[in-house]
Length: 166
Ligand SMILES: CC(C)(COP(=O)(O)OP(=O)(O)OC[C@H]1O[C@@H](n2cnc3c(N)ncnc32)[C@H](O)[C@@H]1OP(=O)(O)O)[C@@H](O)C(=O)NCCC(=O)NCCS
Image 1: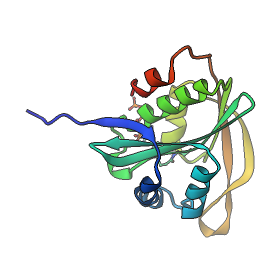
Image 2: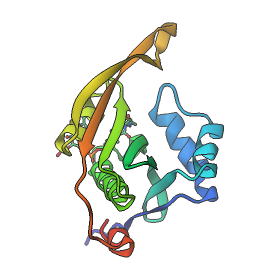
Image 3: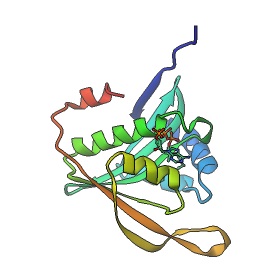
Image 4: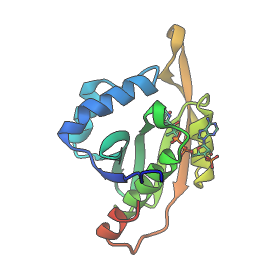
């Protein structure tokens, strides 16, 4: 019999920064620095990790203000991509944005990032625009960002229900 896998989504703690940075460096060509991740925690962004059998396998970072939320980062360990974890974490981030009473959730994504765009579209996000030269790219050139958004309906779920719904 296959041993069961324990998948959790919980708030990011200081001790998670090291494994989060290891994933960030392996998943992106232009990763965030340690300072950026630490700042996200320090300024009180909503920072979450997804764990598989207590090991950090992904993370999501959300900023919320004035009825809007912004998904700053959503990342799954490359060794664990394609197993439904990104979808699961995105669902949680959307639930958290709802909990903060956000009516719209925005994000930027590279036009070349087909996996992420497909995931976001399948979760109800629509492309609403483009930010020219937003991202650094190889060979010193810059790459546009596609801006996507999703309208959120209000949640009547209590925080503990959302926490239990992963
Ligand atoms: C984007 C990312 C979070 C997706 O996570 P994942 O765990 O691999 O995705 P899942 O297994 O949950 O797949 C969910 C959906 O994403 C889409 N998807 C995932 N990988 C894909 C690929 N290689 N090509 C096309 N679509 C893909 C599919 O719609 C998939 O649904 P399906 O399995 O029903 O077809 C992950 O690839 C990642 O961390 N990438 C690096 C970081 C990054 O680019 N983050 C986004 C920044 S905006």
